[in-house]
Image (cartoon, rainbow, N blue to C red; front, side, top):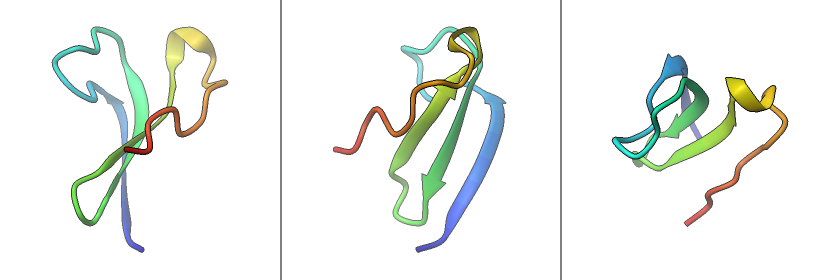
Length: 47
């Protein structure tokens, strides 16, 4: 699967802080972590 990696971007309108996330080719976004959390969380959303 191909991924696009974005840094310092807002995942959606509900996220008010910078986050590191990857976007799959089908448009699905996976949050790698938010900078205020020290990038500790991984793949919190897999819907």
